[in-house]
Each structure stands twice: as C-alpha cells, then as structure tokens.
Length: 415
Image (cartoon, rainbow, N blue to C red):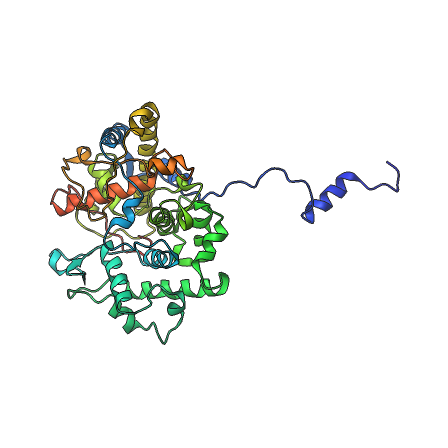
C-alpha cells in the first residue's frame, strides 16, 4: 500500500462510526433479565427453597388436566368487568389498571369490612375492586384512563380520585397517595417523551414483549421494580410484565397485543403465587420465615426474605413451565386435539371441582389452534397462563376456607 492509499481498516472503522459500516449481524434480542435474576436469587437463598419432586408433581397434574380443558386468551375479555372492545381505549384502560394494580390486601379479619367497590349490583374486592372502580368512573364521565387528565391537577384532584375509589365499607384503598403519584408521573413521562400516548411506547417496542418491559422500567419510575440482593441489582418488573401480558391477552396476541417473544415474560412476583406454591409443597420456607408469615407479621419490602420469596417463586414457575412443555412435546397429538376453552376468572368463580393441593388445577396453552395456524400463536405453555391459573385457584381456595397458609404481608407499590 502506497502512502497515497487509504488504510482499508481505518476507513472501515470510520464508516462504522458514521453508521455506514458493514453490519455484524442483527442486534441482540431484548432481555428483561428477570428470569436470570430469579435464578441467581434462588441459588443464593437461605430462607426459601424448592422441592423438585413436588414441583414436577404439580406440573404433571397441570398437564394431565390440560387434556380436558383449554385456557384461551379470549377469556380475558370474557369477564364482565374487563373491556370488550379491541381499540386504543382498551390500551389506555389496561395502562391505567396496571399503573394502579398493587396492594389490595387488608388486615381486617372480617371480610365484610374490607375495602370494596360497589358496582353493577355487587361488591368487588381485591384486583376486581380496581377494575370496578375504573369502570364506574368512566360510567360517571370521569376520564380516569386519560393521561391528559392525570396531568391536569385542577381536574384530577385528591378529592376526585378519592371519589373514584370510594369504598362500600369504612376501609379505604391502601396507598392512596402513591396511586395518585403513579398517575401523575405516568402523565408527565408520556407527555414529555411519547407525545402523550402509551401507544407510542408499544410502537417503540417493535412487537417485543421484553423491549416494552424494559422501556417501561427505564422511563417510568413506578414500573422500576428492582432491589439489591447479595450485592447485585435484581429485577422483578411485576407490573410492567403484567401490563404486557394483559395487552397480549386482551388483544388475543394481535394488534396492540402482538409480541413475537411473549414467552420471555415470567410469572408476576406477588404474594398470591408464593402462597399457592407453598400450599402445593413446591415452595418451602425456613421455620423462622414460615412463623413470620403465619403470624401475619409484616415482611419489609426489599428485605432479603421478601426478595427470596419473589425470586424463588419466579424460578419455581419456570421449572413448572419447563416440565409442562416437556410433557407437552411428548404428547403433542393429544394436546392438539383439545379445542375447548376455559374462562380465566381471577376471582375463581368458574373453576370447579378443586381438590386439595395439586388435584385442583387446570391449565392449557395460551393460544387457540387458529392462532397457532396463522402464525400469531405459540403452541407452548407460557408463564402468563400458569400465573393466571394459580392466582385463580388460590383465590378460590381462600374463599372456600381451604388455604393452609396465609400470604406474606408486604405493603408495596410493586405488587
């Protein structure tokens, strides 16, 4: 090479710095790191452990009952309180719902005195109290699902939000101020970064569930569900993940709910799933931790024990998912012959014939056969449907007085 010739390597580096260089393959797929962090927590946990035999038994029971009934994404909209339309208004409803979807448990021992929303002739508690409150507000022409409304401090005052969440009992909704701040913050971020619309967040994620979860956690402090464990930052992203899952279920894997990597969503680390995993014999607590839970003593958010409960639960459901899919692969023909659907009902009212422990569970693939045929589906069971079912089952066991251990008490905006 003469002195007058350009160095090809330097020229290529210059081209790459200007974005003109050769691509070294596609960019890496987005990852939330939630599952990897859960494995790290489980591997280093002291007060929480898993029973491999019980975990496999639970998965096998789930799989056996999959042959009889079929969970479907269609079931999300089937509940009377969930929106039925598949449009931008439903997207706004789901965002609002999951901004506020946390901490409904009560210390009140008399269930009739617990916080409840009266709507459509009945009282709704827990998660459903939130959905009922939002629907009631919309019926009263309060634009509670509008980001512009959240930003307007003259319109959305404390008194207005208290009216939205007015209770049918003397007990009021927990963490009221935190809920108001979640709405305010979301309104500010959407206005400043996403032209006032959450749909732009969905577009920016480019149909990636993991990318949308990461976008939420990076831009919205109220979705940044992280903690320090054994010197390392760990991620749970419970509400960010359930927001993506609700979009997927509501839109049945299409339109605003189409994600090519929905299988990357883990279970949603809260207090109900650990409760049923312990009742199933999958999740084991040390005697001091179990005593703390049974005595209804609070467990501080971000404490080692709380982090271990959440992380080990995520990993436990992942092992159940892996075992179900192993069984699924071995019996693909039998699975494909099942074309029935079972409504997902978070209050458990449509799940019947529950036996003690694992004999009570029915779950199936999160997509219909038609969805699998048109390319939008995934024939493998995912953590979302497992989580939904376990939640439903635990609520029914509690309602029937068949819970063997209370849920752990942590007051938090994260779940």
